[in-house]
Image 1 (cartoon, rainbow, N blue to C red):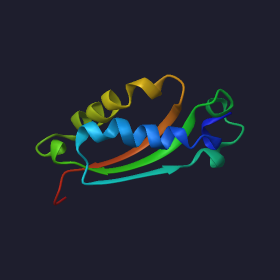
Image 2: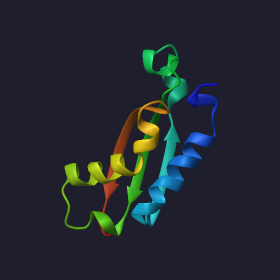
Image 3: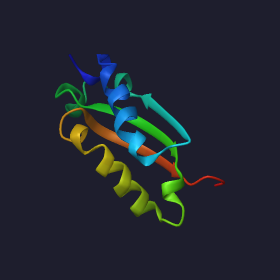
Image 4: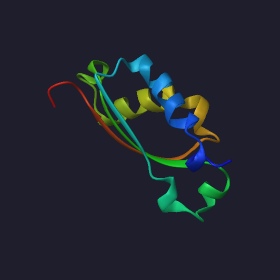
Length: 92
């Protein structure tokens, strides 16, 4: 079963990202758009993530992405092949 057909991956992403205490969180599975791509063939999905968290306040983009990748670390080797991120602090 590939990540594109696996509803567990977005649910697990939400669970792991809850550590960042998001006040808004949207995960879009774009895996179907990448059918045939090497990453999709190995089971890794393509996702777009929009997240608003107070933990991002005062942090630059790199620091925000590091927090996200840290939270999603258990999924990064197999379940997530590509991740587009929009990470904002409240009020941005």
